[in-house]
Image 1 (cartoon, rainbow, N blue to C red):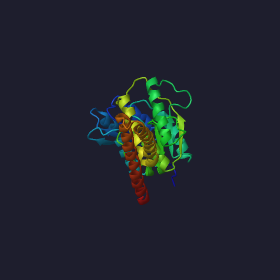
Image 2: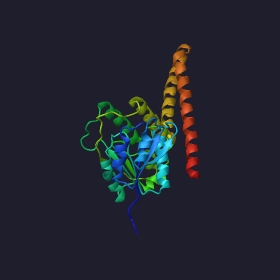
Image 3: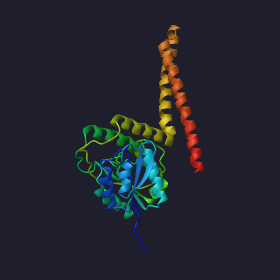
Image 4: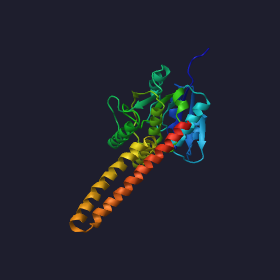
Length: 296
């Protein structure tokens, strides 16, 4: 009986005809099957990958990184992969690092392995990228695992348990942190291994500002859905405390002068409305989330 795990490499790709051939061929040395999601490319990305033996899933239009990951997870479940490795098609990830990510999963040490750029000496990473990744990773730590160093790494390996349990809803770059949050919900074990990234040519197809905002907004949304009482309740309570201060101030002025200071009264009214809206939102979302969890 063959107990060897069935390993697939999954590659989301968008207009990467210059690099896809090398990535597919190098990945084939380390896995049993290569699957490429051609996310609406207008060049020869899909055709090149198919000619080299990769299975290609084509989107008619560009749907986003998260949408590509979602279909790749579905395909990995369909082919009953024991381990899935995700890596980028732009040449920044070195497919020869795949064994580093596979080993902890094959040996049962982890459910998810992240290739981190920040373990050891972080080389060749542009300063603006490093700063942005640090900010996003800090936010991801608050929402998921507090020991990760690279929440935005797209070079990851997933065990069968992780493949089965993670369902991606984000269509954009926020899917990377969504996965970490859902992994935390599912009590999946994550470890990181050091990798090096090739930044000789910046082949990213997305503006780093829009990329960062997409990830931050996605992470905030995921946090608000999971901890609505804290996320909305604390600001709501703080707003009501501010409102109380300004109401007391308004009443004191009125008691002394028989006049209402409009600006102070308006701040009190606005803070009261905001506080009540936030607290109401917190309670409604908490009830809805609780109902959904009960049904599950």
